[in-house]
Image (cartoon, rainbow, N blue to C red; front, side, top):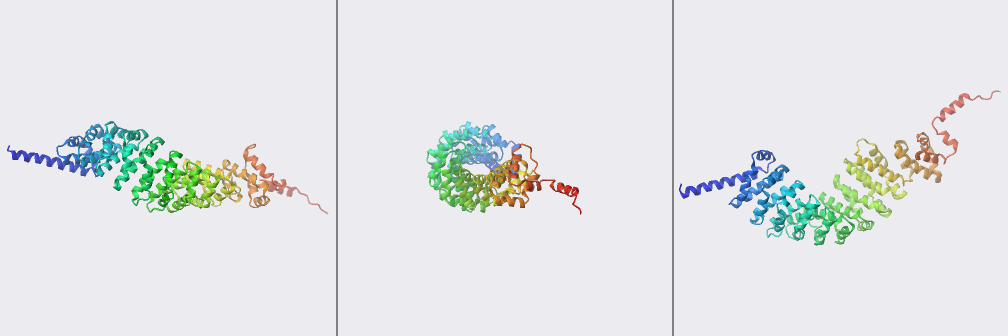
Length: 509
């Protein structure tokens, strides 16, 4: 065979390898082809090509492996079992930027599926190589490495700690200061994934100055970057009062409130989540939000949204109202109760209804004035119907019952309570009767209206256990009226009168 023929054979071989990996990489983008490729043992065919002498073949083979591993955990497991990860990790430090991006993509695709697969990437030494890639000159390499680190860190505190221990956090903070928007996004996301698991991990992120840089990007015009920035700040703020105060001290108010009017619904949701995570900690932090106009802004946001986008805003109002009478009144004055009532009636999902029920209970539980403000929206019958409905989830039933109890025990607005005499089960009825027994002795007008509306008659029809709290309340209500009035409205009294008519002998001349 001549030298020319030998070169032709090698060229054919190289072309065949190139076409093979290109076709596999292309076919791996189509879900319908995945099972066929898997059954053909494609992993074992791609593995040697990662060490090919031709760089483009190496890179395309890595890309194909990443696409396959990204599809499901079985294929990701096959990458691990095929002993492919050590090869990729070794090449991360040696190859060009195109290969580094492809290799980091494979590590990310494997690590995203489960803590066990993420741990496999850690065990093969991937973290050190990925952290080195965060210092690469090429922004695409940094981005790919940050993606992989984020997917590893998001699973649990142990994996996040491993990422921290590898020295990733200071470099991720540098990445959010780079000009490339895509790199900023994933670096912010990675910082959030590290922060979310524990106060200690969040503190690690805070200690390298992340909050100030994240806060500066709240008003960045890029919507996806705002998603990640608001989410990362939420993950930091949620853990403790100290961390929440550090986020507030970065002067996010009133800047963050502009995000509640953003055209992107997920920016709105993440902004509400951030405000919620701050508000939940202390009355002082909630008061700061109220002073900045945050309660009114969140209520407007809830009105403009539907579904799960509303949820963090609903919970934020509940947290604010729970702290004190004054803060609950701020929610009432800002017209939060009608919006919460609307969510309770309009939303189809039980978990959103449950959050609205809980929030209404927090608003109404403080004083008679608070309870009246809630009762006037006619929300009590809705709560009762949700509590009694067999279609309601257990959580919705529990939160509806608790909200009814919280509101009724403070409510002295009797017209809102009277319908419960007819519809409420005994465990709710005792709270209703208790309120009537408190108000009627001191309000003559209310006593008269109670008779005229049929309330006193209904009280006599209630069958309470002798010696029960409900019976005690009924006795207290009856003691507010003359004995003959109580007897007149008691069941069977008309029959007694008719019997007296029948037995009555008129005087005759």
